Image 1 (spheres, rainbow, N blue to C red):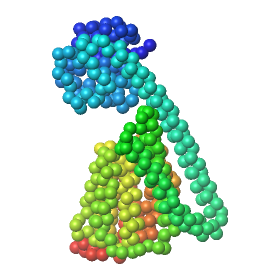
Image 2: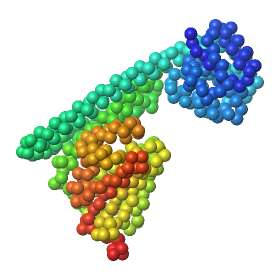
Image 3: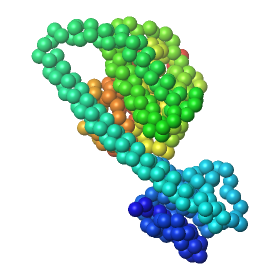
Image 4: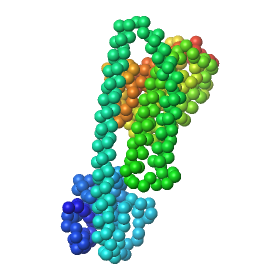
Amino acid sequence: MANIVVVSGDNNFRSDFVTSLRDVGFSNITCSTDYEFLDKLFPELLFLDVGSFGTSLKGVLAQIRHLQQQETCPVVCVEKSNQKALDDESMALFDDMISFPRDLNRLSLCCSSLLNLSYARRAWFLEREKFENEIAKKTEKADLALVLLKQAERKILENNPDLPLQRRNNSNIIADMSHELRTPLNAILGFSEIMKEERLGTLGHEKYRGYVGDIHNASKHLLGIVNDVLDLAKADAEENSLQITEVSILDAVNDTMRMLSLLAEESGIELSVNIADDFPSLKTDERRFKQVLTNLVTNAIKFTRRGGRVGIEGQFDLKDGAILMIIRDNGVGMSAEELALALTPYGQIQRAQAQTHVRGTGLGLPVSKRSVEALGGELLITSEPGLGTAVTLRFPLDLTIGNSSEGLF
């Protein structure tokens, strides 16, 4: 028997409306005057008397949004015949609208059609949840297999010291596959995004929208894995092929922050840059330097909760004038043991992933550390669980151009 909930602060209305629902054949009806506990009533169809809430209607509509996010319960706006209609923006939140008692003749049809929609939504929601759980389990197994594979690889290399040359050759092969792997993934991402946004027309069945979203999200995750693995391989292959030029640190940082501004906005993270206009330039490989900044800032955004902050500061070591680039966040942070794990290839911090719902390959920090060292610098990290992380890139004085720290000595 369908569970129908009627929400109204008007006792007379509730009594009349429930009687009308029973007259058209529905008996399992629950009444409520408190919209804040709707999710505990588990309605399959909700009728809302919008005129009975007055100034608290805004809160009611917020609760409706919550129900709709569950994608299970259709909501009907009930307006008394003498009421003024809601604005278009508010009406868009409802699945249907009836005027009571003027629309009594179509009350039965409204209930039947929307209950069918409710059942379809619930079936789709459960099917999608099952699908996501299966994907999560298979991905977890794949991640574990990858970690075990890398552990076995390390043991083989320790027992066979002549293998590093062959490993570098394999890294070159992987690096050369960059175009072949990224091109089809980018195509999948592009086409699935077009379909998800229905730019060329509707997809039709509601399930297709969910599947397209799953394809898009899975492709983004896969592309991230491919990029991380290729970056690690390229770091091995390109250690002796750096293109050293004069690079403006401030320009490189600003370019990186502009590129990541959308990610930060979507994640609810505030970005900031604190670097003097006359900060010195660096003798470095521009592409590798920007890649390090991108990896570290992206990592900081991912592992900082909504409402947090990520910033880059430019400082000098007062002892020897070395340049210090500090990427600082107030995210989930790491213990000493977790930090040691995060600096190993494919090392993943389960606690941080659980708190932020972010999954990755565990390559961001190792790739960045290897790249900084190849550029002649040093990567240092301080972190504390719950307080955040500070990653410091230290470049010696002989790599700077136009050092503005001279006045400090």
